[in-house]
Length: 161
Image (cartoon, rainbow, N blue to C red; front, top):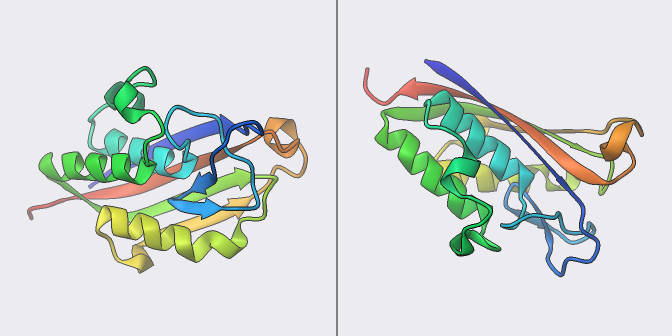
């Protein structure tokens, strides 16, 4: 067994003509996040957790921000690619726990959708995927509503044995 952890944070980009996407779910009442791909901090944190647990590096080394092929990319597609690499290395995801930190917009109505999209992308049962939300009670950049952060922790189990 191995444990992996991941973190990502992006600022809001009020001028960006794109939807806010978190955990593969489009959230219409929030501004887009700044980023090279769709800036899905949830999918990015999960991908880094998987890569870390499998000792396969990090998301930035795999899909650099200067690569034209990943401009505007769907982060769940990138996450599926990471999950395939983790499986090729001999690991499966036992469970996933994600914490999203955002002062805005309200995310609780999107919890089930995020869990479903992440579970599907990783080939997992829904009951093995947890997504939680919190704020910083007005403290710091996130508390001022300047962006969103996500932490992810996963348990990897050997595919064999």
